[in-house]
Length: 457
Image (cartoon, rainbow, N blue to C red; front, side, top):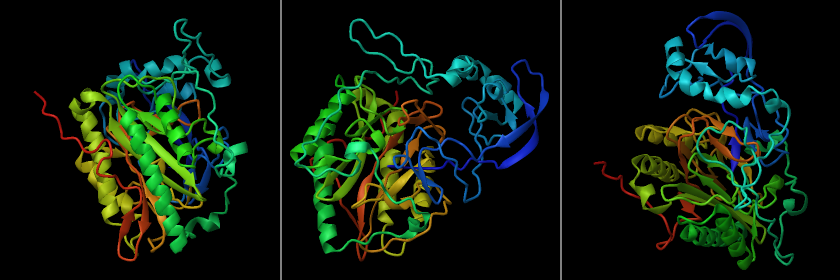
């Protein structure tokens, strides 16, 4: 899975801004809006980032290559575009992303918005790593980031289980030892798409079949009462049984063998001791490395009957499923890569959902992540077109609320900025002479599948 720069840069300029304040008074400040250097996690191909390529602890500034997207108001239940109005307390605390559409909207949202100032007001929050709270005496579990301003109710549950190992007899990718993928960083290669020969295509079919088997085993075990770490253990063991390496393991030091993203987590959730609850939605993202090739897929599953009885759960999960299905229908030689984003966003809007912009699909084969980049939002400028023999993923992330995201201090877990739920589906695809082959397609007996919209009494 890869990350794309969020197009919210407003350029570098000094402007006269009227800052909102809670007592209704206005005061003018000259604010330097320097928006290009926002938080990034990795290498850029045409402004699209692979968060795993570089050390995720070191953010890299990237020049924007297309017009900036409009900022959205952070007001409660407000979908308007933001103006230049900013919260003065946020500015003092170094948060330059707090924009509102009007003074009235800011006032209305103040009681909710001010909560995010508490953890930020301590200067040590910006200078020192948060101090972990004492483990629960009964379980030994703890939240490693107690002062982090989480966007939603989900919290990490540590300690993580011990690092899982893969027998040396199974071929390992280059990052298995030091975490470095050692991929080419040449921007000139961004439109050089690998075209597989017959042998490569058969290898991709084989690893994709194995990947489907693994995710189906994990999905069958995803029930209320089990931990996401248990799901990771199942994935890891299933990979080893199939003489495969779980590609995420140690990929830029990712600590686990799959990603488990619960509720408001968009992607890259780290499996931990958190127990799944009846009513959760869970995305399981699996990638296998087998005989020199990778296959990548993910699905979002309903955990328990309560999850299927929640209209919002069903709306976002089925919207994500449908967005992927609609995009796959368009795959064939000659279709522009950028077109998939137009299809996905158009369909998401019919379900009153937004499309996450920070992450995108990617080429896959001998490399875990490679060109083409496949953004999921409309009017993107990604170059290139589909050609027979290409293999890549489409993996739209769809949210109930705003499309913007934040990253936890683990430098992996990405959640929605407003804490609202999100869902994702992904398939590895092969472009054929006259269309597309879904290499990681569901089987007749695969767990999960569509759920009807519940009737609200």
